[in-house]
Length: 437
Ligand code: UGA
Image 1 (cartoon, protein in one colour):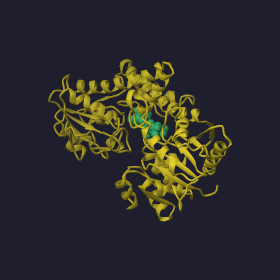
Image 2 (image 1 turned 90 degrees about the vertical axis):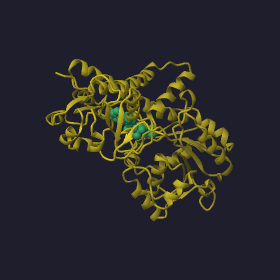
Image 3 (image 1 turned 30 degrees about the vertical axis):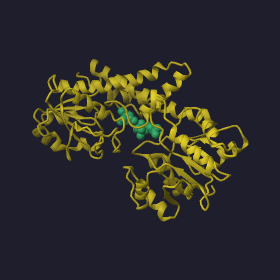
Image 4 (image 1 turned 120 degrees about the vertical axis):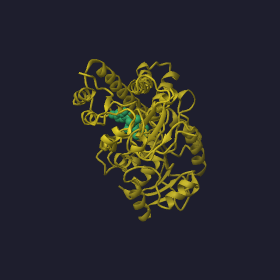
């Protein structure tokens, strides 16, 4: 694999991980971000994202002289650093009506059209609606520049691992010889990886990304509804999902019940797929149901907390354990924990929140208190609601928590606690998906 010169636009989860991983593979990478403060931090060797191995990988790339950061796009595109490949890794937030907002991708495309020297290929890694590669071609106004669709499948909390051990590499290209050649050049970056490389058209590659995330959303909502059924019929969702997951056609991943699924990707991409289907007059009731089920799951967990509190939350102190959208990240975007906390607050609960990583984030409203440890959060609480699956919650001194609380109830919306052990400490435990036998 020849070493390439690569520009990566965007230093978020996807951009920074991509840049650092490519540098580790021996390529010369310039990573550019409009956020000058972020660039200054990265140049000073600081990585603000909570992501295992990423700070070390970034540091190694910088030490080797293979990873540079800049806030100026021309620095990443013009000599002495003209790239062979430009990875576009900028955000595509949820826009009006659920459609993805691709305005940042479009602005980047216009800039690339003006600045890129001949010989480079544009690689779209941002999650973009079907048709975006064609739109980018139009905005570039540069028929000489191939445009490839190369979606990313990494998860937060395991970004570096996922980048180094991908399940598959999807590369979508147009039909011209230049596009095909650029697709092969991109695929050559990955010859050391065991993952299959799937070469497709641009539209298929763009759709694969949305199809994958929406499928995960459907799977998660399926598991959460099964959990509700388990509670009703005296079954246990842990056993049921183990039994399901052993079927290789179903697979065990993404079957854990929860207070709902969230984060910066699944909700946004599920809405975007629905929006795409709507524009083609195709109903997609299955995906719509996954979203509705998710919303219902937030309410179901809030109801469990209210029941545990004796039927009324007004003025009742609740300790919320976990704010991040999942364990292993400080990210609270579209967090199910926040969604449930908001429902509790709306019913008058007084919330004290503890999360080992996520800092407050909920915006300007001062609608909950934070505690810097779980024991302070539990003081005088009537219910502890475990909303994020941080493993350390399972290792807490629950006997102490039981003593600190006003009334010792726990709602385990992630099923990470050992109910028998907690019950032995005098706590009553209501776990999602655990029916009473
Ligand atoms: C998701 C996808 O899993 C990645 O493949 C994709 O690349 C990424 O979006 C993206 O589009 O960038 P991520 O947002 O990091 O990754 O989150 P997930 O790990 O999928 O978790 C999403 C939500 O589902 C979280 O709230 C999590 O707690 C919940 N979840 C996950 C469950 O409730 N149960 C599970 O078994 C797994």
